[in-house]
Image 1 (cartoon, one colour):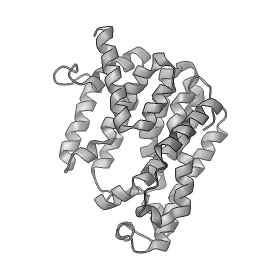
Image 2 (cartoon, rainbow, N blue to C red):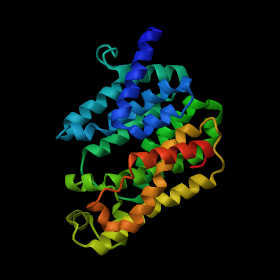
Image 3 (cartoon, rainbow, N blue to C red):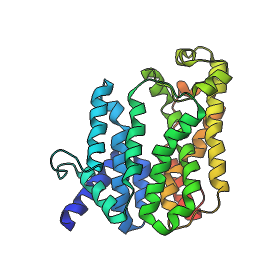
Image 4 (tube, rainbow, N blue to C red):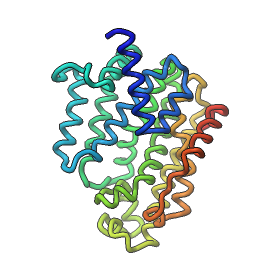
Length: 285
């Protein structure tokens, strides 16, 4: 692939992020220029996986889409990857920065959960899902930014990813509930006197509020552990920028409880951009 084609694919990935994941698009812009292309490829790949459930009505077509990415990473893709700019840019990023394909494959396999309406059983199940998706993405981005520093921030990345995943699931909770999906672990629901059907019914507001408060509390617990893991090296801090948006969501969810099923929880774009900009300057999650 020529440098011109590679640059074009990376620009396409950035443009896709501008439409599909504005927060990570901004994180790319706040990263060193020479790293933006690889980060955009990673984030666009993540966005492609995350939106599969929105594109299909049955699990099987979603599994087929996941299998495409699985085959690509295992080197058994059918046909040329040139027609898919995200795939082409991702392969270049993997080769250039020696990214572990196993981590990316694990991310694909974890996303199969999104295609079905099975509940999360335990807190450990949720943490595993978040670890193989949001946490893994932070770690991969850290490897792009500075492989020397990435290992030192692995613990912080693990916990920050869980906090970010919980915040994201809280933002999507109204949509998930309409679909019959639930990501709050049954372990938490049971502790508040609920089961899956009672939560989805949405009638027992006091207990639903308690469950949401506990779920958001899990996110805040991991955020505190990420901060306690020690300072994050400036070289890899841009990988953590999207996670800096988690705290306001977690706090608001604890205050709002069951009301978040009816009203949007997402802060306005200008506020998220301001928070990320300040975090980039202060280098604090």
